[in-house]
Image (cartoon, rainbow, N blue to C red; front, side, top):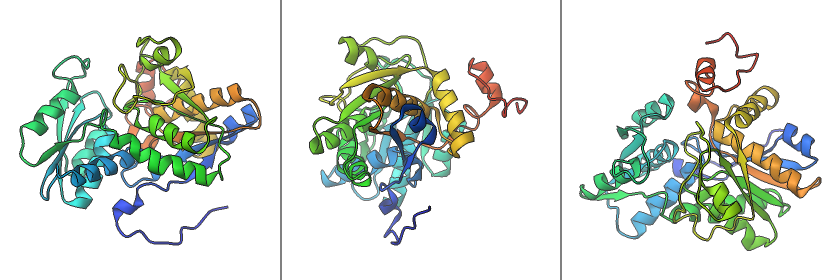
Length: 336
C-alpha cells in the first residue's frame, strides 16, 4: 500500500531528510529478521550526503564563515559534492568540487549540470599533498569568502545523522530497532546514527560494514589500521580515524567483497524493484550478516545510499563488470 505525503515543502531544502524506509524481502526472509533500507536516494540531490551538506553549510553560516555570495569548496568522491551544490544553489552560493578522476561519469555530469566548478585530480594516497582533500583545502584558503566543507573531519556531518537520520529510524519503527549497519566513508553516517540510536537505547548494536581495501575493519576488530585487498566502490572505505569517527560507538564489524555487493544489488533490482549503487549492496550484505549475528526475530536497518542510475557507465554496464572481474547477471549479458 502506498503512503501519501500530505504537506508541501516550503523549499527544496525542506525536501532533505524524512526519507522513507522499505522492508527488504529477500534479506528478511533469509535471516528470519526484518531488514529495512532507508531510502536516501529520495533526497533532492539523490543521496544520503544531502543531509551532511545541509548541516555543514548552515553551520558555516552560523559561525560567520560563509557570507552572501560566497563559495563552498569540497573534496569528494561525488555525492557530497552533489549535495553541496544542491544546497548551495538553493542558498545562492557558488560551488567548487575537487574529485578523483576515476569516479563515475554520471557524477561528473551531474555536478556540471548543477553549475559546480569541477576540478579533477588523479587518485592518490591521503598523504600526498595532491590528494583531492588537500587540494580542495588549498583552493578554499586562496579565495575570499570561501569555506572548505571538510566533510571528513567536520562533525556537523555526523550531527546531521544524530539529529535527523537516527531520529527518523527510531520514529519509523516505533523504537523497535535492534541493529544498524553501514559502510564508512567520512564516518558521519555510522557515527551519527550510532550516537543517536544509543541515546535512545543503549543496547542497540551498531556494526561497521567495510569494503575490501579499507582499514577500519581491522581497526575495530584488532586495533590496527590495516587495509587488505581492494574495492571499486565509490565514496566509501577509509584508512584513518576521521573527526567524524572519533568516539563512534561501533560494536561489531563485517567485511564485504565487491562480488557479494554486486550480487546483492542485482537481486534487489530484479526481485524488489530497487536499482542502487554498489555501496548500498555492501550495506545490505552487512545488514544480513548483522541479522544472522543477532538471530531471528530482530529488526535491522541499513542505508540505501543512492540510485544505481548514478552508475550506468560502471556497475550497470556489462563491459565494465567484466573488466573488473565482477559477475554479469544473465539478464544483462549480451548488452555490452
